[in-house]
Image (cartoon, rainbow, N blue to C red; front, side, top):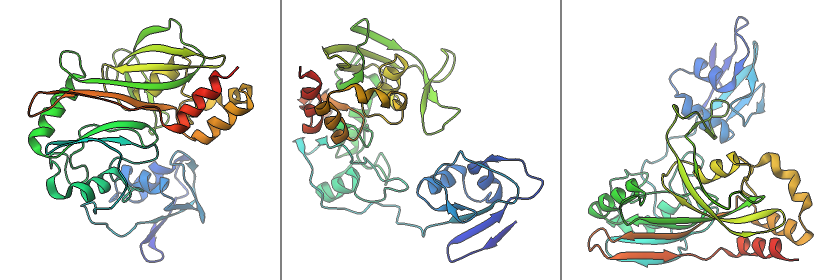
Length: 330
């Protein structure tokens, strides 16, 4: 049963005949005109209450008699607004711009992140010159980095450049000029120290916010080549090269091998107690990092118009470099 609450709020009471089920499923049944994905976003954004208490986990169970309330925010303009945000520009010309993205910066607008994104900053910097192939929400975006991953990202300023760059990223350097490398800090030291992780990935059935390794006949193929750059008593600095570009690929692959990234609360939660074994300075550096230890350190490609090879390197950001020094200290 539904009724109107305060302005913008909709309520429903779970009937006595209903079985206990996930919150997002109960919401989807109560409000069939709102997509389940939208409802999940509203839960994460704190817009859903159960019996008067805000719930942030769409997987919690609700049962008969529960009173659910959803606040539907007012619609926002579909086109991101330009914003004046500082950008670390590694290279720029009439066709493209290469940005050294800091950790914490979301690439494109999404529910809960309508402003303050890289796209907002790019619109403010480039104006109307960005490629429109990605749509109004992702103008110029050829590839992306997770919010808490730092490093190099290239953006197309026109549609021709977008098509040329997209073709190179689709090839992932298997036969073309694209070159990408990441630096990661993982718990323990992988053996062998140079190798390849070939394991299919798909959305987790248990937690739709996570990616999981699945059987070879499921999901999509994902291949990560890795090499240990430095080994420490409790961790290793690992260089990773992607042969495919799946969501969270490096994070999931290294966790699958038993070496989740330091600071990764999503895929390395079981390793939180290992932080207590680190030295005092290393513990402090890990706390200061406050994110997964992953940095897009190298980006190389052929210029989409001239064919000129372009190659950019980004040093570890200060907070990740400080953690490396602390781990290496005797």
